[in-house]
Image 1 (cartoon, rainbow, N blue to C red):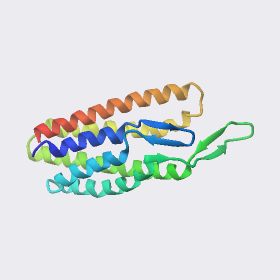
Image 2: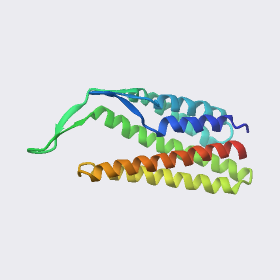
Image 3: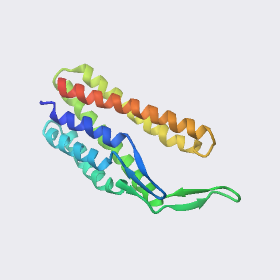
Image 4: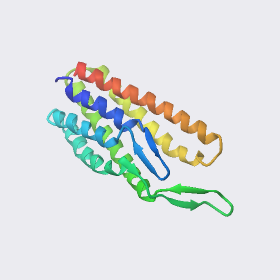
Length: 190
């Protein structure tokens, strides 16, 4: 198998995992738009779809992610919510919250299918190291997302929220680099 399908997923991970936004006021632009990342995933998964059924399932999930990512290119129209008497107002875009929850669920399922497919190919090609590494990458990705979701309760605590966001951002970069290097390794060994 040529390195090309995994190379598309390598670059797709960069666009999907790293959020770099710019803009002012109520409008934000994603500098590394998820839609490009999901497009790259679509190409790579399309090339791998005949290797194992997990890749076809990941490809199908990716189409939903591609469609939902249109909403992430430009985010706007937020609603101010006051959390209680005398509290500061918090800006929440309820529509984007629903979109982001749907994307997270689909992304978890898609990455799971992708890594399961890699594990199956690794077993078939007697590459046990890749199989174990795929399992490890899934566990890391899942734990990161669970911790990120559960960390939401600390967002409203001053100073802790800054440290938490910084720590999660660093952890996200580490996970992304590990996943990207894993895709590069898969391209060379599978």
